[in-house]
Image 1 (cartoon, one colour):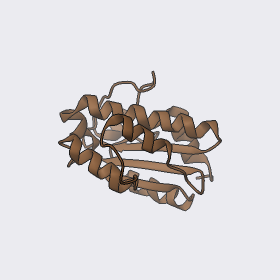
Image 2 (cartoon, one colour):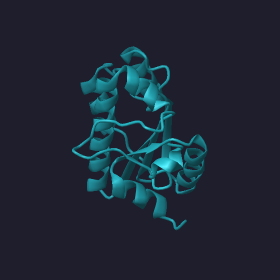
Image 3 (cartoon, helix red, strand yellow):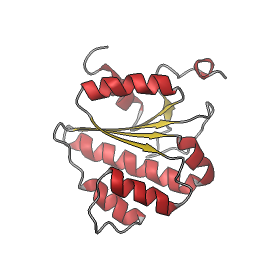
Image 4 (tube, helix red, strand yellow):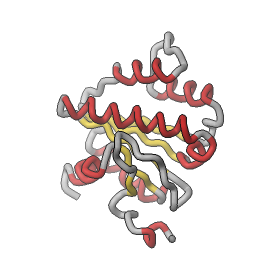
Amino acid sequence: MCDNDLDFQTLARGPVTKYFSRHLLEEHLVWYAHQKYQIYQFDARPWYSLDNFYSDMHAGFQFPDYFGRNWDAFNDCLTDIASTTGKVLVVVINFDDWYQEEEQSASLFLDYMAEQTYRFLLTSQRWITLIQSNNPGLQTRSIGANPVHWNSLEWMNQDRGL
């Protein structure tokens, strides 16, 4: 894979990309780490409440102590995240669990991730969000007027066992 192949292919499809295979996701995480991406990884399984979600975001992104634990504060704190390499990767495994329980919150999260992608791109930086689903048929709402696509190696239904 060329130096910019994976991130270019991913961003060309939109700011958020779905994965079904954990193995494939892990392989790609190795590539992103090698490319010096600052990686934030989360597990959505415990996000059965917004309080748990905000706690994970606060700890994972190292938000300041004054983080207000609401969507506006979340968005404000995201805008303060900087990367020394100009490359950020946000990974959420078990996203389908959260999406099934809290579709509105999960969709709002994706919207904020897309907004960060566009903010970063304005300064020639990269912010990529990858969500892993245990449901090979996961369909999400469009974000930023764009659908969320499967990665290029799991694009076809047959590649996800459907």
